[in-house]
Length: 368
Image (cartoon, rainbow, N blue to C red; front, side):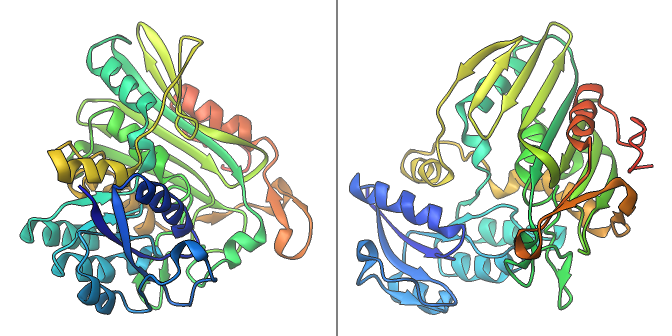
């Protein structure tokens, strides 16, 4: 069945959805019936003649699509999701689903009350590697799970925080934003670890602590350590930074009594006791289409984002992230390309995942 689709937020990250929609159109699975953005898109022959509007509600009324994709800034998710769901359209909402628990609950309620599907764009949850690891854990293939540790070390320059007025902010004009490292760039690490443990509900977290740090004049964390305990009595740590000198792709490490697994979720790679296994991936949009066609389970239903949202709420309402002292930092470049590094942070985030320990417990000098 060919589903009609509208995309809100067609520039920026939304361009990845445009590319996928083009591929799915060629296969007869979707038909793009409208684009929404605050500014006109560059001329593109692929989408010439498609309806365009700067207002999503008006576009929805004119096109009446089956599915609407919202790939807009985090703080706009609730009002745009409301427009989609009240128009009777199924929703694919980019991650994180909402910048506060109250807004997440509202979107969830709107989807339920209107009997519509709401998929959240946690792409890592569609990875075959993630599915294989979750099945292995559930079957006891790794033995008793001692804990799950995640680490990630990326680098962002000054232009990253100049990309939009909401970048690097907890709130904007009184509206929550939640653009911190744990809740946006490394949101997949948090969501993937919780999903592997089968702990995705709000009440599935029994304890939660964070160390939130920053190297720039921003409102949010750019170097962070999260540790929580789930209802399964599993300890999960997530240690990440955007101030690495040597960037490394994120890894989720599962420590079992009979084995160890590493999930490289951006690469769909699973390493079991040193043996690599490569898998494919089903995108959130393709999964949503299958769900609508034959009832295939959603990879990331809005209902299954409760535990992630609890982490987000905790991070965004904690005391402001502490600025790391200049003596622990190095700087390179100028202007928009300038970067700030924490020497040794790559080793610290990895040690956190291996030992299920916080930065302070590891005696990282810049964290104490």
